[in-house]
Length: 438
Image 1 (cartoon, rainbow, N blue to C red):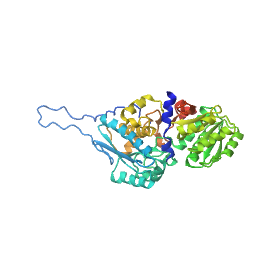
Image 2 (spheres, rainbow, N blue to C red):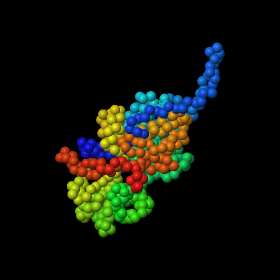
Image 3 (cartoon, one colour):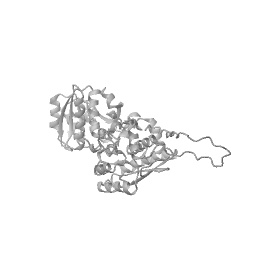
Image 4 (tube, rainbow, N blue to C red):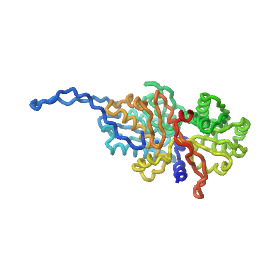
């Protein structure tokens, strides 16, 4: 059952969201605001006009008032990628519905506004302008897909509006030590950014597999180059680690020279920093050249299509591992999620991603209960402490760091049954990168 469930969830384990380009699982009650000090005198029953009770003067940024906080996104709801956008927004809406039917947060409901950008960058830019300037939303929740996010990221930073969760891992989301009113302070990614994951891949190779000479085959695209940059940064910080890098053309079926070079270097492990069609070519060539060292790759590749494509090549030769930031076997999170999500989306990874996006935004709102509902207060609240996400991971925005989650687990390809040729089985639990290195 463990393997089957893992397979079902890994069919689309957010790989499509990132390549096209889960606040605790149990919703916590909204914190009770601390009442203001009572400086009034006891009322006199004979006094016909007792003094009025003290009032709290709450300040609001756009999109928020005494009863409602309005947020939204643009996400494709039509066309070929509606299979991503529709369940993704269903997950966000489901989380907000749970919050609202529970009385809201500090008495305020969350209203979700969205429009279909058809996965078109130009329409995404127009939609952002409408959301900020016309609809005057409080925050953007769940910007979807690499092309659209790349088109709107500079505008988002210029507006300064809180933007929580991006369904992509592009490097433009990364910020290290951003401060109030500085570029990137309002950007709050949740999914692992490629640079962050590059660090984690190297940390797994060193901390989990005791590799000292690590090979990395990276594609000459944004994903591959950014994964390499993160891996190199991490290697530079760890004593006794040598990183041997070889580039391949993204999508090329011929990666033999790169594999030969790593074989000659005598590497202990290989990081496959490539996505989609490039990854199977790399794995098959490693097998063809008789190498037996383990291979580890990005969570973007942790889908059923990849496992089926390579299982026959690697079985009995070496293991293929992939990181993951969603714990498919977190039943506590799943039980809460399943109560609110439409049944058709219960096992849909994109809907789970939307649920996580909604949970992340709501956690910041809980943290400012009883305070001014302003952009600055909200963004500082997100930085106060790590946020525990549904389905296992955590994200920490302290000190202006915008890296996405630094907690990931590890799965490997396994044969499953006659019905399912192969799948992914979790073999190492969700672990923070710092703990993994230590």
